[in-house]
Every structure is written in structure tokens, then in C-alpha cells.
Length: 220
Image 1 (cartoon, one colour):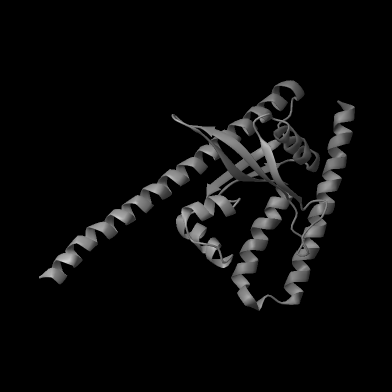
Image 2 (cartoon, rainbow, N blue to C red; image 1 turned 90 degrees about the vertical axis):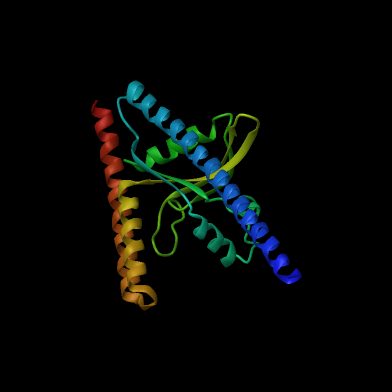
């Protein structure tokens, strides 16, 4: 009888812990979704300002996402870090992410500079894979930004990853990802070389389109 009573009192305790963890995860994801809304709004305003003052829209489109709990814990596991919400918030910079796709390369740096100049944004990390592409040909500008999120009873600094690239860079990255994972471990040097060659061709096209765009601006 004593043993059965011990078990019966233990089960509700475990269930209560699970409920608390689920609530903590929901609140954490809420914080990161709020960060996405905050930065997305800033980007929308900058794009609108360009439209009104310069008669052009630098941003073609944006995509955003918050990592799923399984993905968050999986990344912590691969890094050999403690698998907890506190550990995730401390160690991961890409729980929330926004991909900004621009028309031309010059717009990438204009948008990035305007974001970094805003008083409530702190640049944590920046990697320029446009000037220094990855060996496979991947190009994009990556920034980890920290922004304050104002809640009813406190202000919380939140990190969010922003990737800015051209339409051509985004096209290549999306297809490369699909092709790479479809072929899995069987990726041949031939396929990798072809993908790298395509990346180089796309980069040359981006530069030519940039040059044409500048000529058009001079004419106007």
C-alpha cells in the first residue's frame, strides 16, 4: 500500500513538471515571435521610405521563422550543450530568423547599414558571405541583432538572425539545399563543382544587373 501511494503521488508531480516546461517553451517562442514582428516592422518602414523618397523598393520579399522545439533541442544536442530552454536562449542566435531578399547587391548593404544605425538595435555578430563566399558558393549577408522587446511588466533583450541576399542568391541557396539533401551522402565532386559553377554564374549576373541598374539611374 505504501509503495502504491508513493507512485500515485509521483505521477501528478511529473505531469506538473511537463506542464511547466510546455508553458515555459510557449512563452519563449512568444518572445521570439515578438522579435520577428519588431524587426519585420522596421524593415517594412525602411522599404516604404525608399518607395516614397527614392521611388524604388529595395526589398522584394521577406520570410521569417521560429525554430520548432525539436529543432532547438536537436541543435543543442549536436553542439554538446545542455538541452534546456535557458541554454537555448543563452547559446543559440538563430531561434528566430528573417530572410530579406533584395533586388540588387547594393541594396543589401544599404538595408543592413540602416538597421545597424537604429538606436535600439545592437549588432552582436556579422558574417559577410558575399565578399567572402563559402567554399560551396553560398553567398548572403548574415547579422545577429539584439533588440529590446517591451512586455507588460518588463523589457527583454532578444537576439534574432537576419539574412539579406539578392533574388539570385536566394534562388541558388534554395535549390542547392534541396539538391544537396536529396543526394545525401552520395554527393559527388562533379555535382559539387557544378553547383559552385552555377553560384559563380549567378554572382556574375548579379554584378551585371547591378551595373545596368546604375546606368538606368543615371539616365533618369
